[in-house]
Length: 488
Image (cartoon, rainbow, N blue to C red):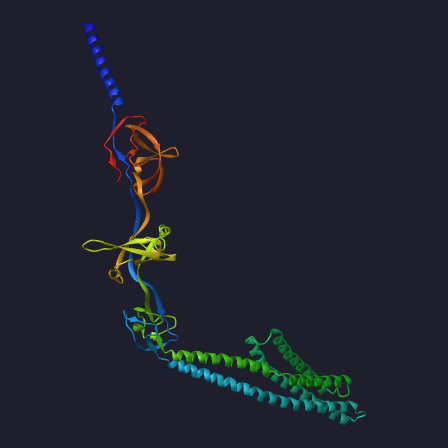
């Protein structure tokens, strides 16, 4: 009985083993069912679409030559104007007042030039009298020194004469100081402040005044010595007094030899010339009280109609000029694919269906602008100008237009899904079916799309390729059966 059971077990084991062996045999000898793609040439295209708007090619802004109240506005928004058409008229009463002020300034400067000669002559006459008086005092001083054996009364008289002479010298010092300070403030300082006099001459004039002030202080001290009677017959006194008088005479001669009026006349003449230029400019502005358009176009903005005030810092009117084009902003990531004269699709959204027309890129800005997307993200985009090739009447001002740009196009391209291509080391390969058997084929990838890739080499039209290269069952040399489909 035990022997029979053992025989039954052996038989069952052999049956199971035979089944397994048969299954293994069948798995290696039966073809593997897979999904495959039959390559057929077709067009490959890569595009991107941006939203645009119809607008004029450029803008011209009309600024007033002067500011003022606007008396009359001659245009309105949306109006077509030509170059030279009146935009508005400005009240020029402020300009008239400015012209009157400038003319008054010119007359004042001309009067000051005339007064320079008069004042100079008056000063020279006064200086000549002062010089003559000083010469006479010098003679008296020499006579006093030459007198000898004088009595006490004569000494007292001489002392009084010395005091009188010293007071005259001091008075002359004060007169010189006043005259020099007036000339310094009215001439030297003005010319220096306006860049008409070098620093060295300015400093020399100041030093001359300081020197006379120093002489004044010394003469005051000498007066006190004279009052004590100690200087009546002292030779040093006479030498010092003669030197003081001669110094004042030399100063007068120096003033008489200088003509400060020439520099002041040049200065006033320069101011007159500048004022005349200002008058001419104001008169020209006055002639342009009517502000005109500088170009032909359409008034798209008219701020002056709201403020009724003209200012040189703000434009009065905005004029749209040039062609009516589709303006579209392209991301800096894509702008290198956009070229002048490139053809694009212009898509007008309609309730009954989109309408597509041809257009051409005519201009590309040379800088990017920051734009905020619908999601609130900042993007760098470049403005591109597109001209409709036909049906211009459909592209009206302000219309929304989608612009489709062609990035890549190839006819008769071989295209596979990205899942069909795999990396084998550093090489791109596919599982190709050749005579019903799998093999690895090296390929060269070209342009890649979202899900597909263009095959530039390694395959040809009619090649049959496994669509999903990630299947574990794929082994080189395995027989396969396919439900081949054309790549699309």
